[in-house]
Amino acid sequence: MLILNNIPVAMKSFIARFVLLPVSVIFLLSCNDDSSELHKEKEMRLLRQYLDSKNIETEPLSSGLYFISTGEGAGAVPQKDDWVVVRYTARLINDRIFDTTDESLAVKNNIYSTSVLYGDRRIEMKSLFRGAQEGLQLMKEGGTAKWIIPSHLAYGNKSTATIPAYSTLIYDIELVRVIKDPEAYEQQLINDYLALYNHADSAHLVIEKIESSGIYYIELFEGAGETHPEDSDKVHVYYTGSLTDGRVFESNVGGTPYIFAIGSGSSVTGFEEGVKLMKSQGRARVLLPSSTAYGPAGSGSLIAGYTPLVFELHLAKIE
Image 1 (spheres, one colour):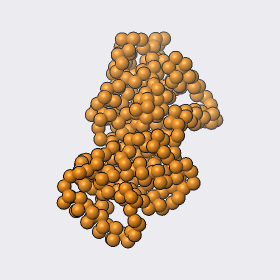
Image 2: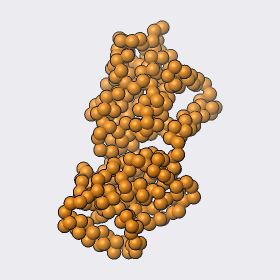
Image 3: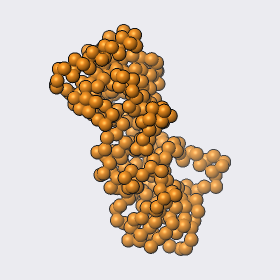
Image 4: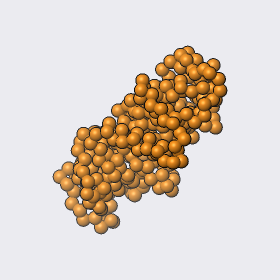
C-alpha cells in the first residue's frame, strides 16, 4: 500500500503538499557552483582516480561531460522541448547506487522507497539538470550510454539527502522513447488500454465514455439501492490507483476508507465523477484522462504530466 503521510493520492491537496518534495534526482534542476576551490580540486582528484580504476580513456566534452556510448540506437534524438522515457541507474564516484528505475536493484542496494514508482520513467527534458539534458541530446531513441557528470553540470555545491555537495554523478542510461507530443502520447496510452477490452476475456465489460467529463466508466458490480451520491453526500471509498500499464501508485484496500463530501473539491475531478456514477456497495473501474486528474504538471515523483490514471473503486457507504 502506498500512502504518503496518510493522505490519499486522489485528494487535490496531494499536489500542494507533495509537488515540492524531492523527486528522483534525475528530475531536479541544479545551480552552477562557484564555491571552495579545495572541494573542486578534491572532486577532480577523485574523478581522475575513478577514470584510472575503470580504464576509461574517453576525453570530456567541452562542457566537462564524459559521454560513453554503449549502444547507438536508431530512433529520434531528443530536443529540449521533448519528453523522454528512460531507464537508468545512478551512482556516486565511489560506485554507491543512489537512484535507479530498477526495483530489484533498489532492493538489493537497500535504497528501495515506497515513494518511488519503479520502471520506465517519463520525464520532461526541461526539468533535467544541465548534464542530463546534454547527455540525452547526444543519444538516439533505443540507445544506451554511460554519463560521467562533474558537479558543475549537476548539483554543484548543493547537497540532497543522497548526494553530497561537489559530487560527480555516473549514470548508466537507456533512452527508451522520445516523445514529441505528450498529449498525443497520452491519447495513445488511453487507446491502448481501451483496446484490452476488445479481448474475448473482457468482452462482457461495457465501457461508457462520460462525455461531460471525459472519463471512461466500467461497472464491475452495480451495488444496491436506486440512489447515487449527490452534492454534500459523504462517501466512504476504497480504491486502488494505477497507471495504464498496471503499476500501482496507491491503494487503501485493506485499510481505512477514503471519506470525503461530494462537491467539496477534496478529490481530483475524475475520481469524484466516477464515484458519483456508483451505488452503495458498487464496484467500478474508471479511466481518467490527465485533464481530470493531475494535468500537464503531474504530481510529485509518482505521476508524470499528461498521465492517464486507472482507479478500481468500491463505494462502501453513502451518508
